[in-house]
Length: 616
Image 1 (cartoon, rainbow, N blue to C red):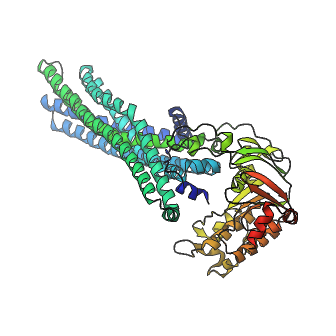
Image 2 (image 1 turned 90 degrees about the vertical axis):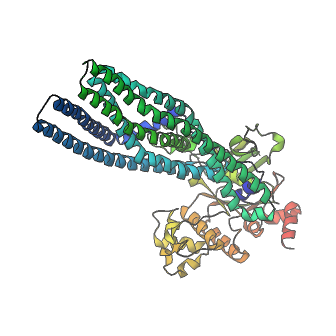
Image 3 (image 1 turned 60 degrees about the horizontal axis):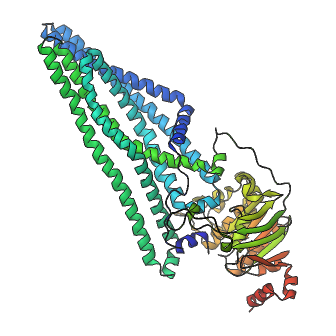
């Protein structure tokens, strides 16, 4: 049974969406500063343009106050016209500066989000397979789609708008203080709105993180149910999966209701705060003007300045919710870099000392014990921390095995004997609870992913065909391979059908093109392995989806191609064991027999019984 099927048919535990790390606020701030430094000139230009646009916007209300005083003092029409012309020119300058500031800001945002996406892909590809399996594809997918999109929207739209609005607000408040310090105190009425903002900010980050986690959990559950629909139907798990889905949906509803409540408190409070300063200026300014303490033009200018504050404050308020949501999303995206393997893939980060490299190709399994933890990422079925695995829960018990370079060895045994588990340890996907699995006297699980992929490759019955041509699918494993090498790899796995396609290697695969069946998809996956040219290959029922005749042909072709390389085959079809140099028999998590096919048949033990059963 594949890993995805196991997740579908297991207990109805829901991933909490946080199996992958979430960056803390300090780490998130450092990451944001690093992104700004990478495009610092554009960021500085955006700030300068916003400041100039805000400065140009201050001229209009001030000159309007001058016009009021000029008319009141009996000034001429020519003076009023001249001041009005200056207001028009400044308004036009503000429009052009603000437009160019948005243009620069959007370009900055697009370049920065491109870096975020590229970094996310690098980190995701560097994740250990075990970490991805424990977290579930839902969390990884939600971070790479919903969260990255939220960050992109903020960088492209929200950040420039907020910078412009913040600059305008500061300049407007400063202008009121310059006109009259006493009237400037009326701007303190905005503090009532700031109190509501502070209340909101203290709660919003946690609330949006919880909403993102709930979304990831729901995505993982739906993906697992859809992928294992046939298993759910066959085992009658409809009610359990429906109940699990309802719990996940209810959790999403609760988290989204919480963020909605926070917004429902914030928005009215800030809206009221816009009116208070204007009312204060009119009352105080009117009183001062009645005592000849201030001119009417100053009162008008101050009132207009504070009235104009509503627009930038409304902009900030409009985007503040998006900033909180995207801040939580960025913490989840950046959290991917908190895993040890992903950290190595991120540039501009101090690298750990390079681990030792294997001295040769020999693989040693020594006194290995292994137990699967209960739940994702060390969590139990209910999301609580699971205790360390106990020895009596081991699925492998003291396994010892040495695999010589260039040897072809077959792992056989009944279902549940521990064959695939041992294969995962040999591939470095998991590490043993005790004992060691080494290649060239270096623990496999501690190898850098790039080094590991050159040493050991695990091929399972799971496969994937990517959108694109046949050539594109094959060159994933060897970008520099020419057509001759691609055709040789296809021939090696018995995929002669590729030459019969309408456009050959240029035939599009997937929707709108050729739709490969299960056999063809698996042959494409095996051809990629041939092109990758691994040093050691672990075949975990890699030909299970092929019909017996095609599987036999493919295995013989692979044997010819991989001659001189180490091949570890895990299969129920015992003709694979017949062709192997040695056969390792697993029973109940223990290695019970080891030897050549002929020797084990002559011994008349467990393998001989399997062989007789295989042949009827």
